[in-house]
Length: 445
Image (cartoon, rainbow, N blue to C red; front, side):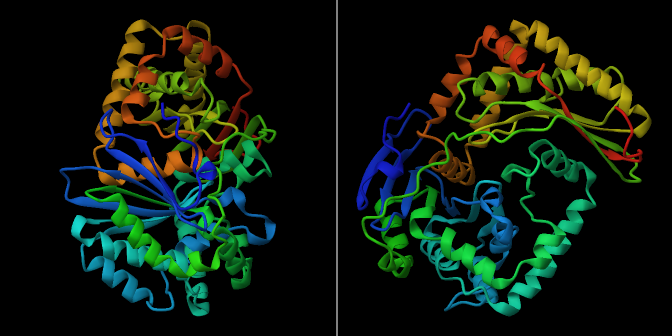
């Protein structure tokens, strides 16, 4: 495991090597520029692409009431024009080199990225950096994008299999920051004036709160020069001694709320999302929890797939997953089934969770889950986009960068006793259930 200090402890104007080539990783280096802007790259020899991204260390959970919805609004607006490019120029320059470019907002970050041929990296750095550093948030585009975002929310709400996740989070986390939708709501987007969006932009897109990541056929020092030139204005305005923001680690978890919430919709399927308290992403039990989730609900050989779908035909889709945040997490199971089968499906799911809480997992299941995780992680990490995203997540959310081999070794070290222990700790916890379907709001499940 890397013992290199986090970026907040690194002197501005210095470069460190985080990971040497090998161990499932290319050479990973970090430079912190005067002003706190950090640049983290992974050199991947033998490929012809480079993925480049810039992430703000803020997401929907960082908004206050006056700025609710602004993180996602900014994700849209930064494509709409700078002092030297309008929206068409931004799109045309990236499209002109076949770039795969987009942006996304999560509860904890907002990321803008482009994957290009290695020879086109200077253009990608220039355009994406210009968007992030020099956006003008054109007033007419604010109103246009307000309509686009409202359409996006409407589309999302027409997908109950997606919406049930927001219904669950709003009930489970309540009024805390993790209970907010990343998209915003109809009310917050309609009410958000441009000046509040501009305030969020000026506060959250300063150099010290941005992380630049790139992976592929690249030279670190060349990327640093390109980024330094592209951010010349913001860096000149920053205090040279400013350090990079610290990663989001730990904190006090907000109270959570067990119980059942039912949203009546005349849907053909019932959408069920059952959850119990999980673990934070830096909890030492995280790897055992991931193995447990794989045994229970990842793939066609998992317990839930076999019991709910294969043996009883109660659902087409059933799976488990375990999102983790800086200070907390949730262990969840989703199932989509015919409304008349909802009670039976839930009974089987609850039965499988209870069985795992008491008996843990078998040695055969443990070995299969580790192999499944190793295969999916290695195959997923072979794209430069995935490697760039991995750098971003490590830089924003962990005290260390892990090589792929270090991660796999931590999974390999998980024992059946570890999984049995985490199953007993988590699966007997207070239960929260979100349901969307043709049911009365006071329906009991």
